[in-house]
Image 1 (tube, chains in turn yellow, brown, green, purple):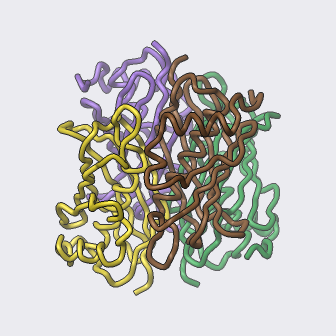
Image 2: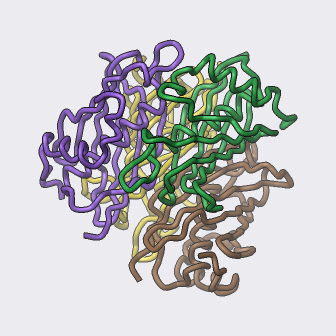
Length: 143
Length: 143
Length: 143
Length: 143
């Protein structure tokens, strides 16, 4: 089932640039760091837009990154043959992130014909404890 | 329990401007339309930043608006005495929004001493059917 | 979209008896009270099995009832042509129920070809405030 | 933060027997297999009550087990000094379980003064792939 990704990091980034240019409005901040069998890792180079009072990174910035890394993990496994659509996202906000980059790591729990489900953890600074945990469900169009 | 809001729309908007100036970066797009007993309504004047392929409004734009309207509903009931912190958000994405404004309506299901829970529905265009449904839990600091 | 239910309460109860006899093990406690366009209402006649310390009704009893009422609402709309499968359930526990019956009311937020999404509220005693709020997603098999 | 459990498996089982005798009604089916720093593992010896059409184990059986293992993990860390209360549970049902025992493993993502958050995976048969994934939030009373 998890034969490994069919797209490279460079192919995924080119795909995102072409299909989702809006995520780069105001400056490129999202980058794909790695993809693997049922996994992906992305980074948000947080800037002023993503900050909140006290210098912490905003909840929406964490949510956007978690959704994106799960989308990328699915894309990497199935290729750009049909666009997955987010149907459900659930977040637990665990700790306040520090100012600075966020890194999200995810793994797919299921990659079915119609639905994919995964979980993502968002990390901040050097702490091994996640600042946010997410689960997401994506509908995969008929191919 | 639901004696009604203790802050007006104008007071809430002034509070958001002061405490969360970042949400207005790139242009003011969020506005509070109404608050009531355990309820609130907000609008997102979606612009290019919030769009996705096909002209639809992005998932993160809906998530940000839903989180904000729930925060505002709590703020309106308890006043600016301690900042509520989002601990959990769960979203179901139901339909693709049309390009254009999003309106989010929420009601609080519980307003306890330590936790508040609410649900929000996001609407697009003239349709009475929600494009996104959210539930959220917020931790209320000791006062 | 919401043309109304195609099965009556009696037809639904007969279907549940035939397909899910296990829910009646130890005594019949679940009953369908009403179905309507995109809605359903069910009752749990809670007995000793469903109680917890202090006489409150257990979380699993509320979860089971909420899942069942959402399933019934879908069944009522699409008929017994293919069994919907629960893919996601999310619960917020709001208040402790009193000992005694629970009533769950639900409405479907979306009834698509592949996925149905709904929300349910569980009530206890005479209080108009829900003790539990649930959202659920169900996969509908190809017909 | 994760100094390790302060209760043994035997102490936890004795506590559950005393405080939650209802879970053993109809026959003992839940057992605690292990507790560790921020982790726990439990087993459900599924019997006829927990089955559904086709011989699969029911969703409520998986939900009950996941809630219980998260509760046990918290109890093991903080001791029986105040009863944690479930405030939120979210489930993704990934695959149909086989008839037979279910095993749930969990780890706590956060153990704060007021809230604990964890995730649990439920396994069936010999498959390393979870049949159900859960996240839960628990309110910890002031001590």
